[in-house]
Image 1 (tube, helix red, strand yellow):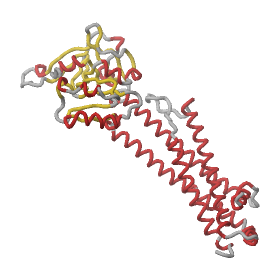
Image 2 (spheres, helix red, strand yellow; image 1 turned 90 degrees about the vertical axis):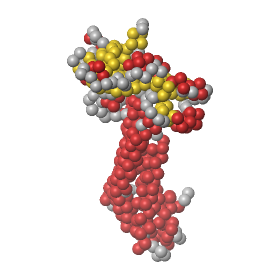
Image 3 (tube, rainbow, N blue to C red; image 1 turned 60 degrees about the vertical axis):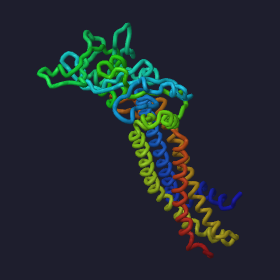
Length: 405
């Protein structure tokens, strides 16, 4: 067995001659353990929030969206649909058209974004898991239906169980002229709400889904689309497929993956996560000052042992190493224990729920998701901080007791 390691282990686990050293060592171990636990819990919570956001956006946004590089719409007949379907990763293709319209139900009115889609769009998204009430349908028995956001339904006082009249939809005429009657500047149609979805306020207070044909006719864009929504086979790399489809379509179209559509949101989440990681690492570094004091006290307490070990032939580098190893073991025990406790807390949070979100939130409990990369990052920072905190007293604290520096 390596002699410095053997002696360091004896110093760590043997009873100390002075109780204050035991206390400081315990505080050092506890501080590092709490810091490591906090790091893994917070990072796992950020992961859970990221996955929750991804699930929310995946229920509405497609995996890939194709839009015209110039203008707001393009002719569907001129779009190379067959070229897209030849791509092995493309599973579903849906056309879409959207524009701001005015909805009116009885005395209430509200501006929304009318998004005209076909049934394929409903198939490629996860909107069915976000339905608050009603049915997810756009057309049945020759009758047009729409699916409204929870916020829109709230603004218009729409209750599906008490729907006795349709919702009126007003779209501005493309060739409107100045007229005495303002209503002459709008095209009007009616549609019945079939369901209400609840995702988040960004969608709930903005969107209404309606049949493509109904929307294109009302918006005076027959045969034209605002975007093409693409669903991919399971496991396909969205960013890679987006680049490949961009090569197929050329410069006339913009091709964006779901991550690129919400790039700021995802980048903000990751930035917040790693800024928090650095802040908590700094706190962990402050907690490691206890380790410096602990090793310094052990060195003072074992000064007679240092003289004895030198007389037995141990070199100064070996003596420094044994105190360095003791500090590293304290750091490893504290960090390892913290990681284990943090993992247990995350498991309990994800299974039975320990901490609740505020009332009315999307989910009842804070979501958590553990990732190996986070455990690796926390372990690495614990090792680095532990090494620095142990090296300082091991190198400088032993100088006055070593016969040969």
